[in-house]
Every structure is written in C-alpha cells, then in structure tokens.
Length: 66
Image (tube, rainbow, N blue to C red; front, side, top):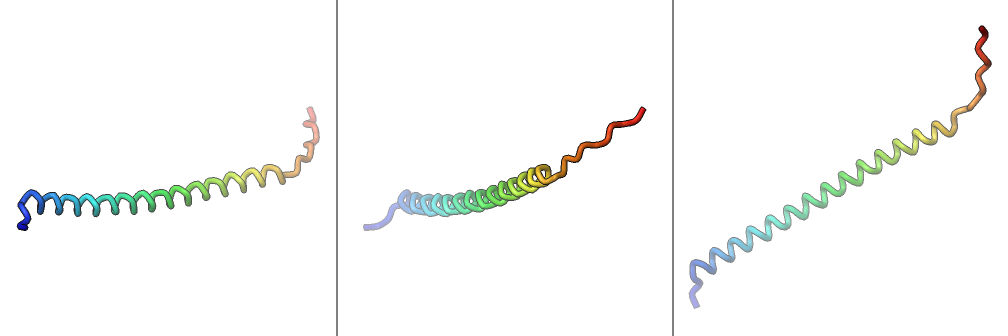
C-alpha cells in the first residue's frame, strides 16, 4: 500500500501539533513554577511585615507640652 500525499501531509501536521503541544505544556509548567515562586516571595514579605508590626513595642508617648 502506497501512502498518498494527503496522508504524508496529515502525518507531518500531526507531528508538528504534538511538538507544539509539548512546548506549550513545558511553558505552562515553567510559568506555573515562576508563579509559585512569586507567590512565596510575596507571602514571605507579608509575613515578615506583619511579624514586625506585631513585635513593635507600643510604648505610650509622653503628652506634648504646650
């Protein structure tokens, strides 16, 4: 059985589609990893700021003299 031109073109198109799908999956995975790293950095920053505010001594300041 000889392959017809349309079958060869369809096979090549399928191969290109698979390559593009794997590239998109890799890009999505990498993007998700960077998103998680960014969320972790923002979470750490918020945590450290909240911890610093809660640790601050709340000494009452003396009243201002007139």
